[in-house]
Length: 436
Image 1 (cartoon, rainbow, N blue to C red):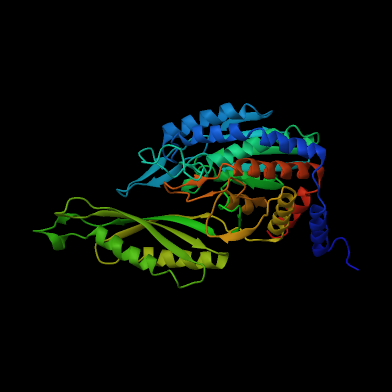
Image 2: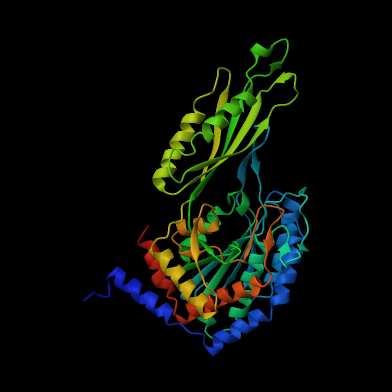
């Protein structure tokens, strides 16, 4: 007979417990509270999405943050703006400059409770201040179409509604929670990464509000990601009378970009995306500067080591005389595999969804998010608890209005079951730590 300390035995016991869950009257009251907030969730999402908060639009980020501070005041919690660390930015001219970032927003209640839940989201979007995609409309099929309606202003609205409803639950004192809303997720979280790591280390369960797929499918395992900026410096010369005295940085950048692209297909699961080449100037001048920007995705540590070595080799080999190469950046998100802690948490979410009549499935994703950061800090987490939607990072981005109540109820019921102990947060945390 298996002993209770056998990890496989305790894992099975935990799964059996969550499969035996039911909705109590006190849980139903929380769910009804969420349903009553449908219009409010939609209205504030539209209002927020109409505020441009591109990752480098300081004015828009501050306006969005002020709106979030006001909304967070509805919760019985401490609301604090947290300064973020600066980062380094490589300009299109090859100059390396210090870059400041907007504050993060931290919302905390019951930090000494026995179960600590970390909820994260980002209020920046990929759409810059001069984007042509600025306002929300309603499509003919009823979907909201607008910048950030899914990724992730709709998700933040769902998160806050779930917390507001949970605060009416009689067992709420068993769970403390901390929300971190960051200004820089869409550029790799360079400013908020330390805050995410600190929260991940002290929490038991993480909940992040990236959008689910349009059918509600969650992201399971995630790859590791890195962002790189390679500065190519050449020598300017007149393109006619002194062409051979120059060293063309743009031509060198093109050769380097082709070498980087050539890494694709050499190792399973590894991709290199050359996203942008900038530099040069007048047509009669040999270009003396260029920047190659690229992203890499890898499935595991061995692949990360391989791609890091391959990139370093390319960056150390100038394509022709007169050029120098200067590499900046690196890996920004750790991988997020489906380990024991993740698997157990996903099963708990599946069981919670079943109580609500919501089929929950998950699939591996090449995308990355704050869930990667939290997992690296030892926190089991679900990172696609936001609204159902799609076409994110494009002017076709959409969210289904019916999913707002649906997804907020899923989060609210998860919190209720964490409070009752039917979802054992300490067990989930132990399973995650065993794999570190």
